[in-house]
Length: 97
Image (tube, rainbow, N blue to C red; front, top):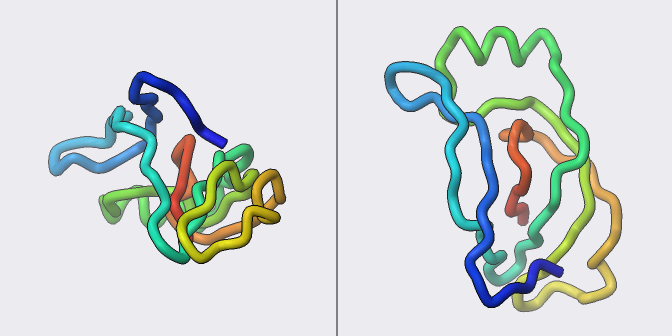
């Protein structure tokens, strides 16, 4: 679980309208029915090359990681479980439904 007195931050790769750059934001808190995943692995697939040159806001076609926090209505038993997901995987954290 992500806990701290101070706000923790994470980075992800984003197209800002002019170029891709690493953006730093506060680690999000999952809402109802959501989980927070700490991303451990992401791939570089042919689709990633296409989306890179298409200037998609958040990159990474697929990734995997560990659930570190759950939102309301989601079982605490999921914390520390490994998951795979699609989309916006070039990030340190992802909130997923």
